[in-house]
Image 1 (cartoon, rainbow, N blue to C red):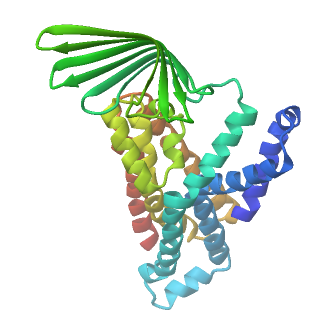
Image 2: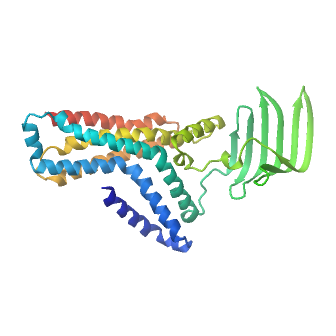
Image 3: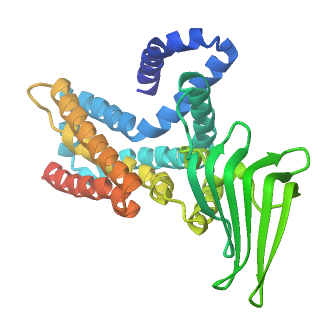
Length: 340
């Protein structure tokens, strides 16, 4: 199924984007790497659905040849008939888990970097207006306008608290990261310090300062969570929670899907076997049509609840696991009917 659908996907994607690729003179080597990443990226997303359709196709062939009837008539239980499917699903789920944890993030980074470098040049991939972040327990920064390309910002403010007391506050018209020195250059620098009720003011036209942050890390790209292995993703989410990021829901969805996807493989395998193990008048075509309908409904639920969690305060845990719970109940119901 992968060998069948992935080339079709590449062909459709290439037909859609070839104009922009030629317009931007994209090197062939980068296009080849992009479609390698494209293959891994979409194979990871659609892995359970490809397996679902494969099981329906294979089991329908057995049912149409009356092999399942002969198998069960010999006294073998339906649970024993189901066992090889579950063993196969376990192998595929283990591979999907490894793919999602380590390989897919690498492919996702290459896929998204290419897309925003050549295909969506004018679209911002990170927040650049009114950036307000908590760096750690004591420090907060604000930049009215952030320019990722030059690693610079306009109207910069840095506040340092100890408890609930403001100790000092730094203002600057411009801030720019000097990569050579690993320092920040502030233009029209003003520092107001408060100690025992006494305020002191320090001013300078231009000053180099060592801050405990990297400017580009303050506004992660929108696909940042997808590009990190599981351990890095956990640390990234913890850091973003401390900073008060508004995108925590999106990051939590990415984290939870790494676990929900392997579980969905078992659920969809059971549904596929239960649906296609009965010989029907329409043959394999009816089973495949029914299977595709179920797959579309599953994708619909997955996308709708995922967007709800990303764009609102809807719990990410509910959004990610709700489709699996609903289809898990459906799998149990269909399995009981198939046994009868």
